[in-house]
Amino acid sequence: MDMKNIVTVKGLLVLTLALAAISCKNSSSKNSSKATGWEINSKDGGFQYNTQYKEQETAPGLVFIEGGTFTKGQVQDDVMHDWNNAPTQQHVQSFYMDETEVTNIMYLEYLDYIKRVFPPSADGFRAIYNGALPDTLVWRNRLGYNEVLTDNYLRHPAYAEYPVVGVSWIQAVEFAKWRTDRVNEHNLAEAGYLDKNAIRTETTASSNFSTGAYINAPSQTFSGNEEIKTQGRTGKVRTDADGNETNVYATRESGVLSPQYRLPTETEWEYAALGLAELREFNVYRGRKKYPWDGQYTRSSKRRTLGDQMANFKQGKGDYGGIAGWSDDNADITAQVKSYNPNDNGLYDMAGNVAEWVADVYRPIVDDDFNDFNYYRGNVYTKNAINEDGSVKIVTTDDIVYDTLSNGRVVARNLPGDILQIPIDEQETYLRSNFSSSDNRDFRDGDKRSSRYYADFDSDDSDSGKSKMYHAPKNTITRDSAGNIVREYDKSNNKTSLISDEVRVYKGGSWKDREYWLDPAQRRYFPQDMATDYIGFRCAMSRVGSKTKSNTKTRK
Image 1 (cartoon, rainbow, N blue to C red):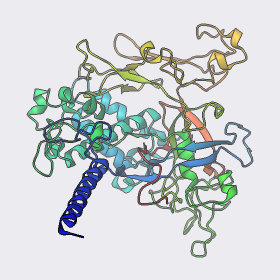
Image 2: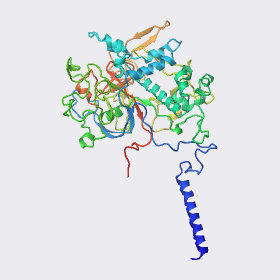
Image 3: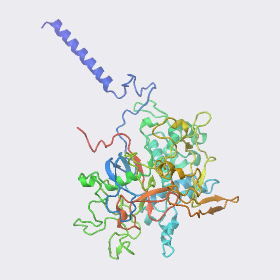
């Protein structure tokens, strides 16, 4: 081959390699749009997106629960004859759940924040703090002496790592909202969007951080507020590794903000309690697993711990902790969290210690014919309230709305910094097939369309409507002109049920319950605005992205 041909071949080879490199770069670069070819995250502006995002980080206190299918409900003997938990096959998406129940020290941190930011001594704020306080009087018993618990259980350091009780379902939901905002506020500070020192020392009611408000209207709650500007809490201009400015505020596209903490659904709680991740036996999959641990008994069968109880529960009449010097469960009331081994999901006390609130409104029937994926009853859809100028309406100290609960307690419906929420209307429901109303708590169960007495339903809620499927007593509570509470009891004899849209499911046995209730399939209900000395709660968080964690499983 002559020199001329050799040069030509070399030139073609170099050109081919260059074109291949360019093609490879265009096709594989995360910063080049596959839709338009334009550069993403360019220095001169344009579309900004976190193309380096890998997967959701596990938020504080949580453990990862890989989703899957399982048999929800009771397959053991129904000795109580409730027939309210017939077996159904369900599928649960992956999610996260608190490793332990929410403890006293965790709840005290919440109370401390409320007291500092919304001081009870200030006009209009007293009800916020009082509404968040647990009911410590739940420990009282008319024929028992428990005053030491009434006075000390919540606040004394001896009970710091014990599960909080005396908290209603409504209070548990508010705690989860607060926790979401504090974690996201911390995430933004760590990422450089907010000033951490200012957050710790200068937060006031007018600068209370809300995740929803930050996402939808950061200029109204941060740089748009002169008082907040002076506190160093304005949205900071981020810079990349080269010192170039990026976004002023973090958005969902940044991946910095975590999904919300919330109460787990009943299906999530039961699935997590069973701990099926490490088991592949057919009988387990079909619902034959009775407890969060392996086996059909509450005592350990392992040689080193043979005979020890696996949970904290009432073992018999007058027996809450065994004989002195040889305690069966090392507790008489609640026990410190992590006193017993976790289940296969890494969750502690999913049986015993305290029962736990879950998100669902109670109904005896689980309607798996309509839905068998992420089953949940309790959806009430809302939307952001919009001002006349098109901006979202941010709650101020003058806009706080208080609700008087059925027990006379006053709680704040919203807090300054939140976006005001209103029910969805026909603008969102018109011609939709997947939902048609804002309140779906009694969908297909409890409304007049689901009753065989359809024709007998009255248009109002008077006592003459006694054939309603769920016709619970309705006590009324009002205040007179002097602000005194006026309580009126519903004494009608025509009421047919205690079930309503304001009762919530709670799961798991407690220190006060017998062995029967340790089965995760068991379900009971309680008014959402009332509390007991045996019901606590733990939080959950949805998983975004892949079903599995990248460091746990690889498909080939």
